[in-house]
Image (tube, rainbow, N blue to C red; front, side, top):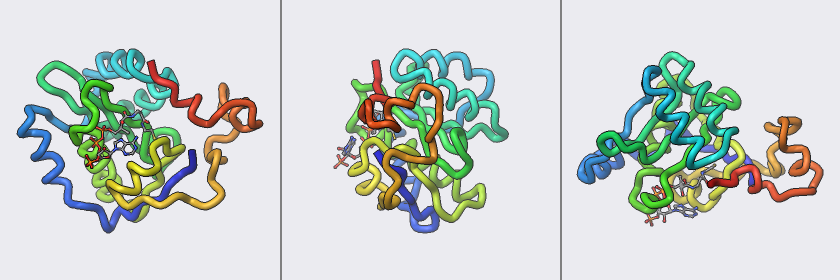
Length: 175
Ligand SMILES: CC(C)(COP(=O)(O)OP(=O)(O)OC[C@H]1O[C@@H](n2cnc3c(N)ncnc32)[C@H](O)[C@@H]1OP(=O)(O)O)[C@@H](O)C(=O)NCCC(=O)NCCS
């Protein structure tokens, strides 16, 4: 699970991805601080506590650096940037039952376009799980010799991963 690099100046257009979601009654938008408790609870139920910690950082930023996908009151997914490190995309996740319908792509695109608007020319997908997905959707490229990503080395709870005692994806374990 390496880090990956994305050219933010060469992204596919955002609007078609958002429009596709709108036709399915799904809204993709930036998170708002008052709904933080609802989003963090959802992330904790579906993904790891590490991702809850990162999402908190996203909600604390101005503007928030977390995007949400929801259908009415139902949260379907989230995507963050500038949380573990500046210029990093992630974490992101979509409800298992809702995957494969473009929600992840719309969230990814919304966050990457926001990074471009914030002034970044390249973005880094930190500790990328589904490498083929990022290659396919936004032309991301694996950063050579970035596996397991030294950009996270020393983080509490990951010692076994960096000493070869556990697979890198054990960090991404979901419920
Ligand atoms: C990765 C994830 C966010 C993708 O969300 P999604 O809503 O299913 O993605 P999309 O529907 O937008 O998929 C877009 C395309 O990528 C493909 N794709 C999705 N997940 C993929 C994966 N893990 N590997 C390879 N291709 C994948 C889809 O099949 C789809 O292809 P198509 O356009 O030909 O139909 C979601 O699978 C998820 O939450 N995974 C668990 C958490 C995780 O690994 N997060 C990333 C950490 S870096």
